[in-house]
Length: 68
Image (cartoon, rainbow, N blue to C red; front, side, top):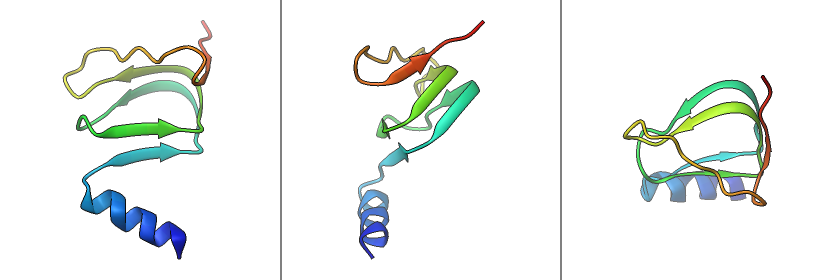
């Protein structure tokens, strides 16, 4: 029930959230400026803002691993 309430609240506020994902390789482009990421493992991801500029994720806040 708590999850349903949280989803309803985020939809009403027009917010997008990625929670608890393991992402490996690829590109993420957010569709609006109200998108958030929380508790994710992001490996080798090109994260772009809605205007296609690269988003610099602050160090110490996320587990980031870029492989070549």
